Length: 137
Image (cartoon, rainbow, N blue to C red; front, top):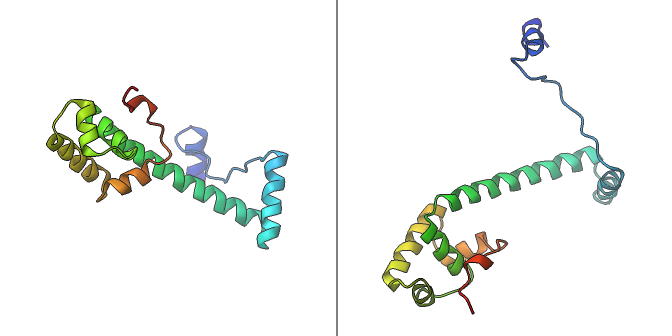
């Protein structure tokens, strides 16, 4: 670390650039060691790969959430019901709107998610809980 960087670090302007080790609990350490042995790789390689995959998944989940937040409340209702497999007619009946209105919402939702079909939407949101959006009964 250069003298200037060290000074900026001491004044709190820069963060410490040295890598920070992370401590794993015993169970996690053993699981990684076992996986490394099975795959004939080092525990460091396995840890790096797992952390990278987890961070990529978190970024994808954050992006999906941001897209969800870009929907209007009505679009969220339509997206939830469409993801649960309800037809346009069923959604229209439940929300007391026309089928054309539902179609318009679905088109807008697909554009905002950057996808082409309700099937893709259902796959993207497959692990989400939409119980609050279900029709009564």
